[in-house]
Length: 139
Image (cartoon, rainbow, N blue to C red; front, side):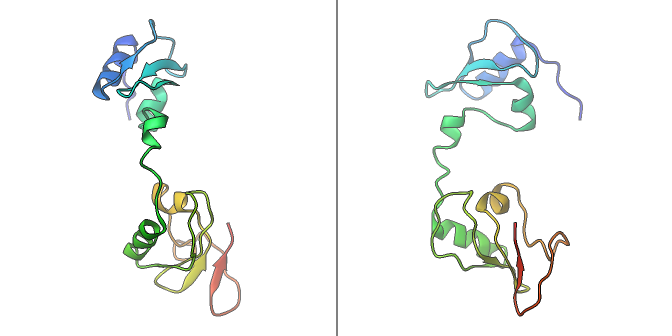
């Protein structure tokens, strides 16, 4: 992947594409944090490098709609052919008890399942097996 040529105009155009503005008066480098303002008035610092590689924008706005429910988590896991044994859900970093369609049980976080797009470590060959009817993999 060829990196774009960063400059203050690139920063301003990127902000404009997201209905925001770049408040930094000059370009400070691709790994230096620049000041931005989103369309909702939140001011935040980010690097041009993070914009391209992490596809990030305003953290406050992007986290606003992320509160998933237990039903959402369950539907997501079932859409992958799995089953959710956990009966409560607090946040994306909470460990869950999940079973894949081949019966392997492990304890991932929803962040790993949803955002990192991981699935059963045994089926993918990254887990370890234990004796018993269920296969349990500890993170």
